[in-house]
Length: 331
Image (cartoon, rainbow, N blue to C red; front, top):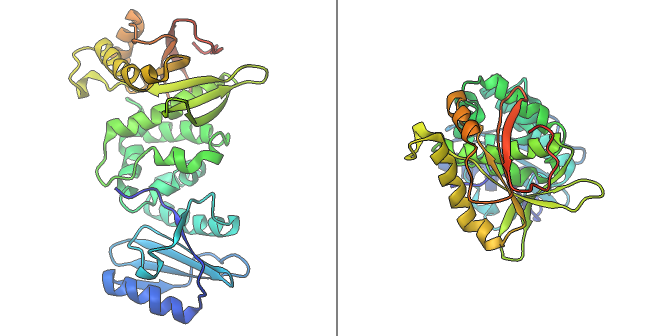
C-alpha cells in the first residue's frame, strides 16, 4: 500500500535539458506522459514542470540552484529513487504551498464537491491525491459521509471543515491525514476507525483541551492523545470505534460495543498498565442502535471510559464509567 503523498528531495544540479532527459523521457517511456508548464507560478528563484500521465497520474518538479523537489502520485523516475523523502511540512514552505495550489486545483477539478470545503481539501490532500488512495479516500467522504449514518456528505464535510479549520492538527497533518489510509480498496470500518480519533479530539477540543497525538509511553506503545489544559496534569486517551451490528458478527449493539472495547483493552491499554482514559466512539451507529447502547450503558472492560456519539450538527450524547479525570460538560 502506498503511503500519503510526500516530496522527494534531490541535491543534484538540474536544468531544463536534464529534466527532459532524466524525468520526462522516463515517465513517457513507462506510462505515456505530457510535460508542461505548471498551472501556477512557481516560487521565486525556482523553475518547475508539470507532468500528466496517460493513466491520470500527476507529478510536479521544481528546482533551483541548490537542488530540486519532486512530488507525484505516479512511478518515481529512476534518477530520484535514492532521494530523501519529506512530508509537506518538512519541505520548504514556498515549494509546499506552490505544489498544494497545483494539487488542490486538480482535486477540485476532479471532485468539485470538495471545493466548498477548502480546509478538508488541504488537510487530507496527502491522501486525496495519493497514488493508491485517491479514489477510495474521496469515496469515503462522498459516498459514506465520513462514517456518519443517516447524514449527507455535505453535513459530514461541514462538520470536519469547521473542526479542522481551528488548526488543531496543523502540526500533525501528515500523521493524522495518513490514518485515513491510502489503499486502492476502501475498508469502510478502518476509515471509520480513523475518523473516530478525529471525533474524540473534537469532543476534547470542545471541552477546552489541547490535544497532542501519538504519545509514546514506557511500554513501547503509542496512545492516541494527551489532553492538556492550563494548570492541569495531561491525561492520556486511547480511542476505539465499534462497528454497527449490521456489519459485524455481534448480535446486538451492546455486544458490539463490549467486544470492540475488550479487544482494545486486552492490547494497548493492558500493556500500558492503567492511567489512560478509553474513548469509545459510537458515531457509526444509527439512532435505534445508539438508543439501546445509551439505555443500557454497558461496561466496556476498562475504567475510566467515555462512551459517546457525535452527530455532524455538533450534538453529542454519551455516558462515562469510572472516575474520568476530564471535564466534559457535553456529556
